[in-house]
Image (cartoon, rainbow, N blue to C red):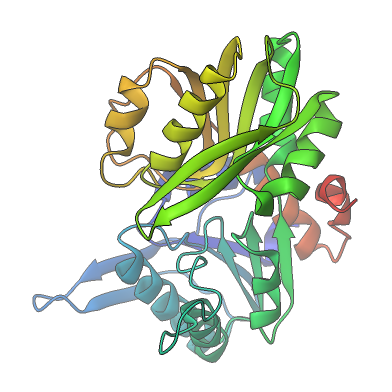
Length: 317
């Protein structure tokens, strides 16, 4: 497998790239990604990748624009180095929340970024837990969409939490929450929210039985953690015993870490390393799980022209 496989990455998440290579037992392709004096991105692939199956690991996480531009330049460099196939491995897809026109005269930036990735020369995309699964259709190349549900649910299985109920923070997350509930053999509930202003939502009700239960709030992204803390406090008012939270992508922007730290109701928050933590000194209640084994398995199967559907069948029904 290793003779024709090349894995390289930019500056977005070098630790994840290195861990993927370790799982695959191959050496990471050496590449220079730096800046010229005026700030332009400089890329130099220092090894021969002619005719190789190249995987570029680069989540487009904050700083989003910098990391997207790095990704595009890396893809172009690989294309001009005569790579046989180029797969953009995007553990986190930035701009995914701008996936539709929800008001007049706004862009659909998720589609724009997809166009840029295709135009730069990518042959296919490997991504994980898109904010909206329909974003796969924005690409004119094959997209493999993975889910972190197995990684996260296995963690909660090991904890053996009694009287567990999986809670979706909104109606849009019901499908994902149902998949978690099925995996964990747990109950299901939904937070009923109303938006009182563009910046604030209000929890009106909890649909489902949560009194005297331990609950897990599941979502794809934790950004500022405002909605998460609000939902946790509302659940506490409805008589739950303990509140856990799980999300694939820990963006943790703005006051997120402070909010999680100060929320006594939240016992533990689970995220993955799809996005590197800006501050390694995070509170103990934030637990980071690795998705490197999942991504490594998907890369190996893609390279060997094997099906990867077994890696995400759990979420389909």
